[in-house]
Length: 301
Image (tube, rainbow, N blue to C red):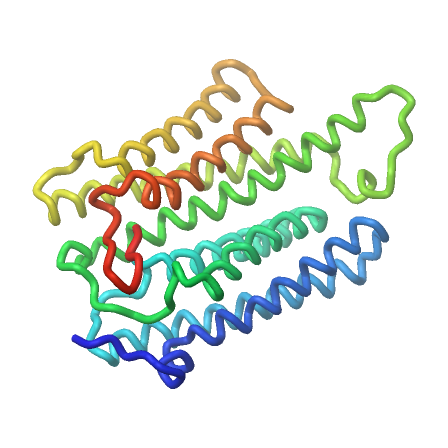
């Protein structure tokens, strides 16, 4: 089937709404940045509501894009190429922050989350490496396992991204508070108690680990269906296992070794670096069964 391109397709396939939603991420990024220096809660609340509005716009764009793909005869969700994975990554990062913010007073985290989401959305919207056109998928990707595999993994990635941001905040607050007699600045006063940050990191990592485990299991079932085996030590599979082991070590260190504080914060930060390499680095540097290159685009999973 021929790819439908052009300005009309750009509107109908929802891509323009993802580009517009970038404004709803950049504005909160600026708002949260100013909030770190002023402590004005009105500014952080306004930034949160703008970000939530952007999340709704992205939800609409996903529905429109999925509907459009079926309309042109592509009966698999548009999740498998670089563009769609980037906008979905930004989506789950923002959604994760919105949910966490409901339960915790983590306004300062908004700066890191919006920076990460804006980078992903900006790259997807303006990089020639990530064209937004919807293309027919390879037969191996035309499976009912696909949507469940991708969604569970990206929910995990969103959770780990949130834990990464909290890990940075923990290290900053811990470093400042560990200096005897040092005055507490405005920024530190905006952060919750260090024990609250640590508890949130742990809970969010465990939540992400559950979905990562489910995603790997579903992926193994999909691999057996597509390639005749549950595991082939493909680079993507290998790094997925490394990612899983990293966060299993996080849980083990907390329970069996009694680790906490800076050690767990560092594991959360390093773990997210492993996630990013597993998600993007492997496909771009060590292509395998999970990379599907075509002349005009990059299908990546």
